[in-house]
Length: 115
Image (spheres, rainbow, N blue to C red):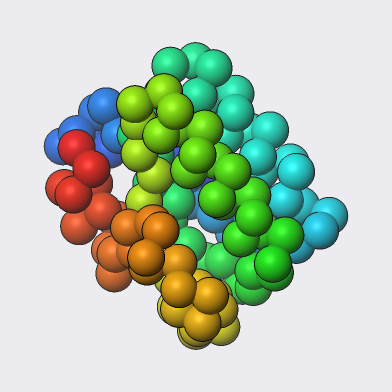
């Protein structure tokens, strides 16, 4: 199961933050991509995925993040990941996500970097 809460960052209202909760796996990944695509279609260009409460991420979930990143980049936007910890942080570092995406320890740092 994956759930999320979205809000515009208080100090940078042009940045949308998605607080992810649960697991990003084969069952939930397409749902998240559809949600992100809806925001892109609504002209959101800067998105931070807050992964503090993400319990696990599988390869298909990482693929969805790459697809979302590409879609935002094609529209002149950007995507950042914040707060990944534990097994999620480990998985992202093993596949070298830091070479493709911006990974930040906190939402505020991510927002400052892409705002």
